[in-house]
Length: 218
Image 1 (cartoon, rainbow, N blue to C red):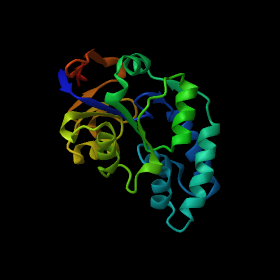
Image 2: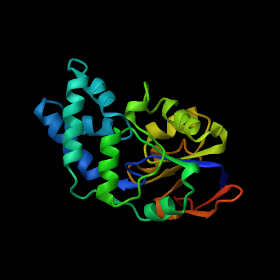
Image 3: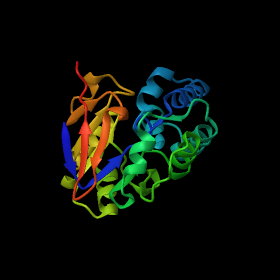
């Protein structure tokens, strides 16, 4: 499938960086420390801001205080954090003014994980500090488009989580979903599903960005 667009908005974890084991370790540790179900907490954590995960699973706790603790744990846990195949190639080929990372992580955590993975740091980023309502609300991706100066309909989102897919679609964007974190059955709201970023290639950049996506065959 060939997709033409003017800009691409990449999620970070599960798309460019494989941090799934670290996410599971940190949230499991936090859940057990507070007498919560690790399975429930980890299931809520993917694709959302950590403060919203805390509010959802432990509304009785001071989310702002716990959020700082979780963030520090995530920054310190670098074991197994690595770039997905194809991530370095597509980031290096993209014109900097036509791409942004839109992540539910804080800027400090995003920079740490990209550093651990050895990926180039893009000029444009939307992180958790930049939004009032995180994914699955449209705000993060609308801010990403505005940051680059493009209309939402001219942008393509690359995501791995249902919350992020919902955010992209609510923003009026096409979404390429990667089956790196969730099964395909939970990604059906996307425009197209691929197995990973290795199946997404940038064919050309002028006058439009042309993505060649090899769809997942079920």
